[in-house]
Length: 385
Image 1 (spheres, rainbow, N blue to C red):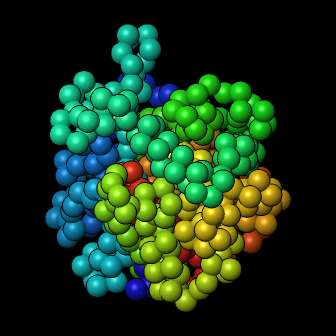
Image 2 (cartoon, rainbow, N blue to C red):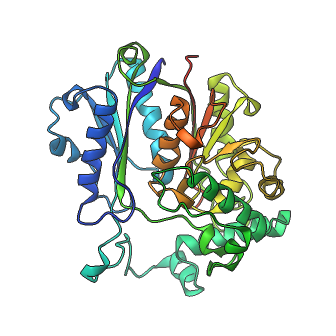
């Protein structure tokens, strides 16, 4: 396909008030274009991830003043959307459908506390009906409670423990301490994790991702065009998607196996690589459990061995596998699949500073959406195929 990521734009991130998601998105695209050494009118393809709120959509074209686009679409596969957008952008560039494609996600759920408003979440105040109504009557309605059920199932089958999940949080905070963009940089210990308040058992506060305002965009173009641009090209060597369609019923593998077990090997096969070749893994981590399950399903460790693997010290700085080197969604910022993707680009470029992984020839990016419903995987490299 010969497609590369040539630009990365990250806005100010975290508790940044007074701006809409659409404004963050427009700024992220402008930053990505400037990073790539391109003007905004050079963009002839635009893919947006609408998020849950739907605040970023096709109208972004007008906000950016873009004319005569050859590709424009809204992509929605929740947290796997970033990887999917890059896949579609690469195919568009490879086919000649578009030359320069911007992929963007932005969100602004946090409101200034002085305004008296809290975080704005889509669906707040809605009364669930049908099966969701039955689950909600038992207290199982939010993402926290549903992921907690999935984690508990893994624990019962494989003996995974809360302490093992805590090692993931501690390792990622150690990476975040080296990342000037991270929202949470103070080191934490396993005791801090265990003593943090319960959110939905078995999840403590430090098992759960941040909430962030901001936006991230990438520019996808051809390797030939990128050769004349200022940033090191990040080659898109492989990709895959998987959408298991799990249900909360008998026979489901929910909590035991995710779609990463399909999308990961698919991307590796396309890249002509094996999991042993991967130097850096940027994994979706809305919860520590999500990262643990992705480690198993991508093949970094055997099924059921994610807990001992995390507890071995393999994941933090100096460990044998560089995982979520920016701090991930647990400690850096929460921009759905753009969190692992943005850090993957930084690592592949060799621009990680204090957190730069010494080996970064192959970087795996894993995205997850819904209740382990949607998955995307990318294999990126500073080197061409």
